[in-house]
Image (cartoon, rainbow over all chains, first blue to last red; front, side, top):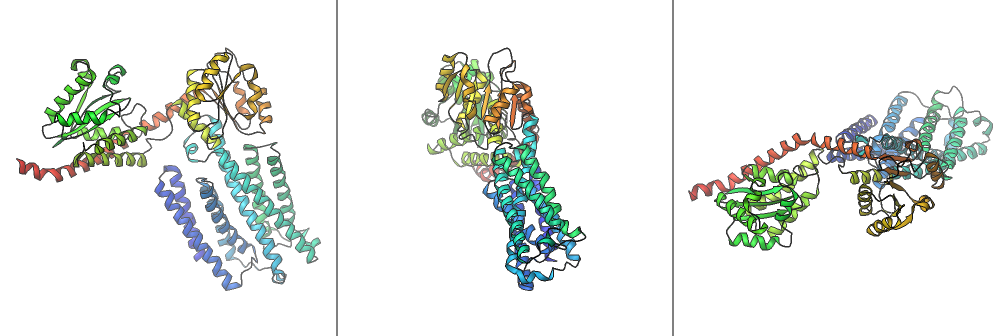
Length: 270
Length: 348
């Protein structure tokens, strides 16, 4: 019930951000920020309540979505203020809403955890912690890449419209995109690597290498490293890198939810 | 007690008349003292900018004060009244109140919706106040007018977009580079518009200009003016690696900068964004460069199209602005009646 209220709160703040984007009323922006902050606080309380009720571990996909959606909002709010990247929330909130909706649907199902998880709690914390923070950072990279593409298209059109004046500059977006992409790729890779060592430790390496989610994670990771190396070597910059981030993000999202739909695999239900 | 304004502006008078009636800030206190000595208005504010000279005043016998004010303007400008009387506007309540609100909101400005005038009105008011030239009525009127300007700006889109070529170029550059601080600009050619654009960029903190021209002495003059350096046209490509904004405005009858050149520059620049402004006619930069990633090309027509579009957007906001102004004028008139009507009756 509380999570449903949080979902509607996020939806309301998205509407407020959108109307503010259209009408440029500062008061609306302030309200949108207040509603988002309030919902993020409630979301945090919700996570704390889960901790006290179940000795919280991220034991299935539902828990991961609960935490992931909170991290996206919290990090986006922080970066929006830090980089003065106006309207970052407008691009991050739809993903949060999608994840929240997914969580609401998942909560209707029985999402049982693999039984062996509680025996290896530190590995679980490390693995899921790194994957989720990496995922959050990559979502911010996706949002800023989307904004970059829009702003760049406005400038290229030579007839900049209303969006032009509302979005931040290309330099701001590039910095935000590069920072979040770098952190995201590093954290996500460390998460994958920790999973690899965990599996080795548990002598389950052969088992996890047959898991579709693990294979997809390796592919996604490799693609992210490719795009990051292009950006670092300055062979490519700007629109193409941003477009790459957007495309790979689709794959990342499929990876994230794949275990829910894959018929078999170590991560099934996670 | 009535509020009136007498003055002229860019809408009614040519510059030859405006400059004769222009009142520099340092002279305003003394002139207001003369007004006071001659009993021209009981309260007064002198507003003089490059586009207008206006005297706002409050008096019981407003016609007498207006007559004396006109005589004073003749004396000050050393012109016959007949030389500028038809250029003068005299507005009484409530038009005078509406006029001030529209002036302070930038609706009466040459560049519709500009904000500089708000500061100028504020300065004129503060100067009058410091010299004890204002009282209850003008204090309230001018303080309210500044709130009206803020209200108009916040609740309408009268300030949307820029409407000057140079400021549009700066705006575009700021949407690419975030800030012009530490951004290096190169100007090829020494045309008037390119100079304006370059000056606007320097005022926003752009790094020293590199000015290149076939006529090195002209380039040196402009470079000195902009605080930059001049390089001969033959050597400008050697400096392009560190340039973020290139303004081209030569009289060359053909394209000077080709796609292959810019492609090579972009490699040298590690694909950092490059903003090209082609002000020349015929154009100096090949249009094909716009297809290159991270290269943003604008020519004079593009900049003018944005000017027209923004101007039209601002004009579309006029009705809403006037609605707000009329509403505020009504509030002020109500206050004035409440404050002074009983006294009027008593005086009567």
